[in-house]
Image (tube, rainbow, N blue to C red; front, side, top):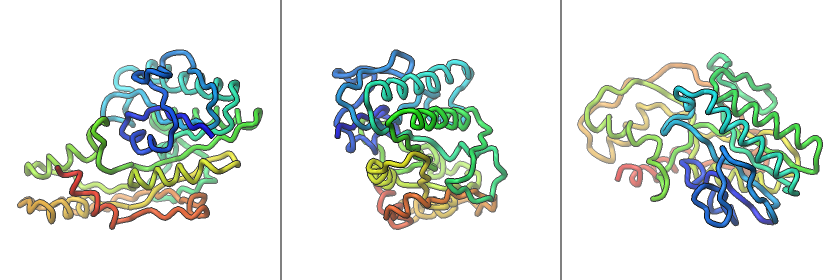
Length: 273
């Protein structure tokens, strides 16, 4: 089995790079490729992990900036070209990094099982849902297993070649004494994302899988930062906004067990350096 990965240098792709035999990207000398260009050479590839994403730096929702047409042309059209080429060149499995944003048009507070139909509101959520639709349609008409990994927020220390981790600015603002807006949301560590992907790479049934771990309040997160740094500033008040949790039935059935608060606490010192 030869596994190819797109987006290996990104904030999320860095966690998946150890699964791949080769990478496809603008800076890869062997097989250069970009979302905006023609489909890559997938000779010999049996499994494709697609994590590349063109967006305004630091933003996923709202990643289109002032250019929604360009955003869709790169990400939606580029992904369709990639998936079509994979099907034509004999790739037998595609794992697409999707997002819980495919449900961002639903009212907060409802649980989100894998059987629930997507209802996106943001352009980002719409993009991910349309890419999923294209992949699943291909899987129905070719000998291809199409899998989407609908991930919640992904945290963890960044590799030297990757962008800063997702909480870099939040931690800096808190330690500087700036006002922190209360918020809570669902999170999963990049290591647990990688484990989820590894488990799914053996699956032969197409469809989505949800990956999520912690329901994390900024108050709890920054209380841990305060403990580690002796920061004199109080953490924000707790947030009571309803959150819609992803129900991870498929991964749990495969034996996936995320690291929870223990893994978060283990990771924070490296994220504070």
